[in-house]
Image 1 (tube, rainbow, N blue to C red):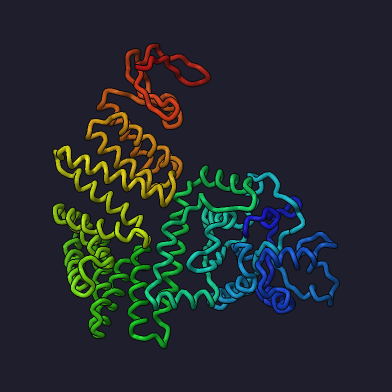
Image 2 (image 1 turned 180 degrees about the vertical axis):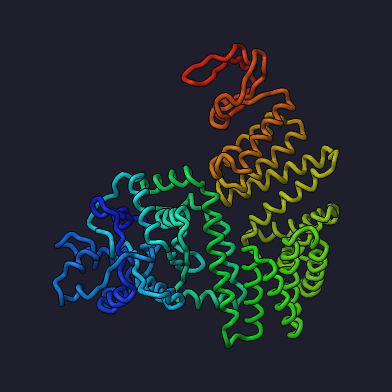
Length: 556
């Protein structure tokens, strides 16, 4: 669904709609109205065809067809209890939507007829607005649970509109909550584009896109719909968790599609090597590290036989990254593969090439894990110089990550000197600015950057500034995660330890449960007043006001 309220209803009067149009009838509808459907979006089909056909009866298309006298054109359409919910955006080309469903059915024939819950066919499109949202969402959840399986259509494959629509993501959220079977599909035309990108070594385009999915920024036609959905997600799961679920499921789907591409005939040697490289990356991203290692070793073997040094170097880099993810026992092996890759690429491309810098960045990472901080720091510095020269090529996030890594190394010493601490602070501030630039102010990575900045500020003796950064990061984590999430718990523990060491105690209604803290006269507290924090002294014993303990304080 695209987010149009009348198309999102699952209530027909007071009863849930659980009908579905048969797959055969969907194809018949396409064939019967093909000329009218060419070039139209699903939303336009709803407005120009479905609503026109049902205008006199004011019924849903399903009811209209089942009430058509026997022998009429629309009496031939078959409807039954839905067993497959189809999630789509109304901006999709309707014929491409049908083609995607056709591909899914061909790949998953099952044991019977698919009855498809597609909103424009089974829901009354003449109902002007949704009823009470909480009640409606409960009914929708029971409907989806009864259907038992959901199909999510992704168009286009590399920037799916589906991932930017509040209603579509709400459907995914409900499907996850119901623990029903989830499937994804792209039509054949999009699969062909996907395979072409794999062959051209651009298959990881979606990995980069998926990494930036932020469901909190999804859109709906009506702001009230978006507000209702966002409130429900924040209350039950938090956006960061939902983001990760979406990315995980979609990555698994594209990994499966990429593995299928390996079995295609007619690929040239170079194309096959590129597909192997991309399959290995998809496998690595979904955690199938053993399969990823086997795949990339096959790529390296093919590259060696072909005498393609650059392709071999790319495979060695990927192998190093995979080994690094396998754990500490593989760090040295990862270092060796990455070192080989850097040497090959430097010889052919030159030491200042961007691709060499990318490999060197991974080598620096494993050197840091091996506690070879001096070499890691030198490599990070070199990478940073090259990345900053190529910032216009989309290396903003890489710059932020490297600055954070440099800052961490500078703080590693048991007694870091003043210059190192200041350099670390500058690096953390630079990383923070970049992450805000990419993700906005409320993203998890922004909170992590603020936590790092707080640490160095504390070591510099800038306690007030450090505490403000901790508090800002805590607010962001609470925005994205549940109260018991390790990020939230850990940040508040850091705040408590920080203030305890500073002989201060902090209280804030939003972050501490009633009765969690008890103060005595003379205790020092840090309070938020507007956008600033101040130090104050408790000047009275607690008084119960409105069910909570309140204290009188004097600002220092």
